[in-house]
Amino acid sequence: MNVFMYRDINSLLHKLDPRVKMLVMLTFFIYALMFKNAVIQAVVFLFVLLYAALGRALINVKQALKVLLSVFIVTIIMWLITMRGPTIIVLWLSMEGLLYGIGAGLTLVTIIITSIVFLSTTKVEEITVGCMRIGLPYRGAFAMSTAIRMIPMIAGTASTILQAQKSRGLDVDSGSFMQKLKKYVPLIVPAIVSVIRGTTVFAMALESKGFGYSDKRVNYVTIAYKPLDYFFSLLQLLLIGLAIFIKFYFKI
Image (cartoon, helix red, strand yellow):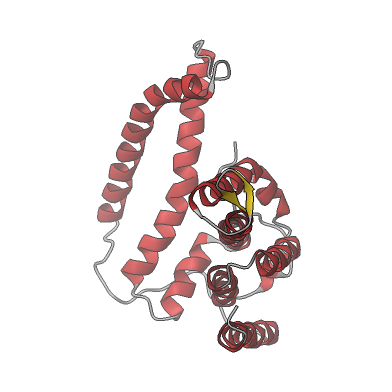
């Protein structure tokens, strides 16, 4: 099982500077969090899918489809139950709650897909160097890139433990939702122990190599702005300005 999201292919997004892709991700986050209108969120969601297609990262989005659908449906249900409105559908459930739930669900899905595209088109080493170039200290940049690296490793460890338990006769596919949930509880302890053990070994490896001994760093990966990077950066700044204008002028 390949748990690392980065796809080593040739695409438009792979050619961009990591700082530009961070700015693109920030732009999508601003649009996703600034507007709760379901129509606007749907338009932003379509642009996110187009962005994923440019990076040829739709295959990773497809792998996370179940999680995305779960987040979307649960968000709609929560807002539909808790939010009141004048237009009643049935009982106390309102159309306003439904529309707000759809917008909130699309917000979360947009943020998740944007993050998936970023990780699918950017190497961890490029993320570290990019964070350093925007002013983040090396320790902070390294911690961020390490956290990103650890997420798929934890998922891979959990998947390996699950497969091992299935080979020993553990049935996690039958029964009701609560019964399935109880069967996953015994898998949490070995997963946590394995992660702690791996983190300890990683820390010892860093200490043995003198991590943090000198503030002067030499990076194997080098990044530099190209004309395409300037174009995308200018485009993102214009889009951020447009979002602020729409928000405060039209008061959406």
